[in-house]
Amino acid sequence: FIFGYLQRRYVEPGLVVEWGYNIHDACTRLASRDQRIELFGKILSGELVEEVYHRQIKREASLLEALKKVDEANKGTVSSDELSSVLSSVCAAKSSA
Image (cartoon, rainbow, N blue to C red; front, side):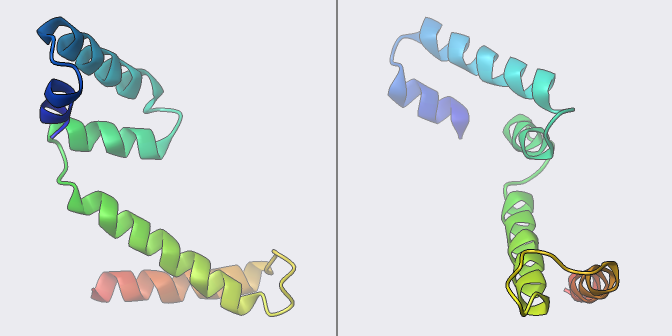
């Protein structure tokens, strides 16, 4: 995917290679600092399929939605018991999916 995009964006082969290298290098260097960059790099390198990213985004959205429901006062905080309960329910839903 990325190679095709770079070929369309930068017709000159040298630029395609340069951008490809720089993206790969950045993902490699920054993967330990940010899980999303690590995930992006693994998808680009073919280690993971893109569907992993979409499932991750859905899980994050489900977790955020569940946390918002627990935070009835809309303060942006939940107790440790509430957090534990939400994590248990979201993880249980994840394992059954």
